[in-house]
Length: 189
Image (cartoon, rainbow, N blue to C red; front, side):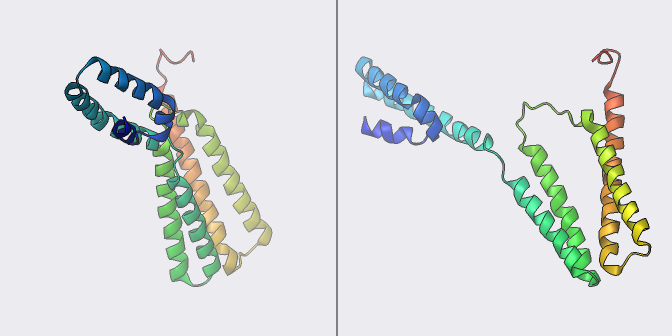
């Protein structure tokens, strides 16, 4: 029975806590009713087939940390681009990092959702559109209030315009996708 308890360690902890005692009791009953030569191969085969998939399932249901890591890297690159100021090479490197890590963060966040989760991004198209317009308004308001932009803030304002443009483009694309997805059957929703 000690060997079977060790075999149970192949299963995830949460699974063992919930089903481990029942599995051990079933194993004892099988050994009582059948020969060990029949029970052990069947038990080992079950463990070899089941434990890895349960471990993978347990790992996939954990909250993903990759989007957070990419988000932190995006903010760090943005700070690098802003702090670099007039050093154009470092600023370009920072902006490239923002675009790269921001994209990777968005992709990893989208992939970290559970498979059964409904994709309702197109239902929120207007939020992207409004957000983009708000960023445009804030950047434009700042630029018109200051007049001629100093070199230290020019990059930030231009980056804000690019973010606003990206948000508006995303909102328009999702809005078109939403409108195209509505046929006669889904028009009443």
